[in-house]
Length: 341
Ligand SMILES: Nc1ncnc2c1ncn2[C@@H]1O[C@H](COP(=O)(O)OP(=O)(O)OP(=O)(O)O)[C@@H](O)[C@H]1O
Ligand SMILES: [Mg+2]
Image (tube, rainbow, N blue to C red; front, side, top):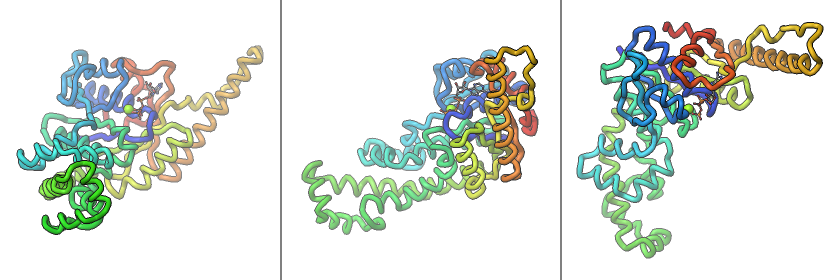
């Protein structure tokens, strides 16, 4: 069975970097591994071999067993429509202006499209391990709530949003035309506006059963996956990490561990400066010592409060963007060995 490792956390904490490091280590340990990555920095994309490629997995030229693909949350609404609607209906949907508006208004739909793609890879039978870097467009937890949101959306929420009620029959929908706002909109946008809205809503409604089944399958994948919450010891990412621990168990599995990225070494908390250290340097060392102490305190508090395993990943002097640097990052991390690679 394919093992899914989901790497999540606040923006900018190192999700893409860590998911790449985990994928590199998994491949090195003999697992056929797919790194599903989101918007990696140029050099990291090159190292993973996804620099110029898209959604289709490509083999890494340097590391056997490592494959990479982009988990692109954009323009994938179209793929959702094509999967869940009859071909003719799907064409109408993707060319509907309301479809575009809805996709923009409900960003969960984009995360949902990415989650569908993740599920496809997990079910393909091709991989021992799939490491998923969760899309930042989703703002974190939304990646996990997207299946339920999207099910609601096609099942009625969008319809309520547009019509102010449940989906009426075709005929009564046309009676809504009397509403002043819509009369005005019709005057501006064309007299067949309502007909087009109605057609769109009915078309969308036909996808509901299929979307519901797929959403349930995606939620099963979420529950079976190992989820890692990445954070730094700073207030905003920590608050986001807290939120993951509180809310993920409702929609996915409980996070397996929290990873404190950009950590300073513990021994810095007490490293004394030799007597002949120039004052400026001694002052500098005291600052770093106090920062290392603060970080260690946050890790301790988080672990105690959430009764969770904590891993630390060291703050590297340079962005880890080569396969070698990623492997090194994993080696120098503490606590990631629970993943078993
Ligand atoms: N341990 C580390 N030491 C030094 N630099 C790091 C470390 N981890 C990540 N970085 C750097 O920090 C930056 C942000 O990392 P990354 O892109 O992985 O974060 P992210 O969580 O994926 O961000 P986003 O939410 O924008 O997708 C990158 O330049 C990355 O190379
Ligand atoms: Mg990223």
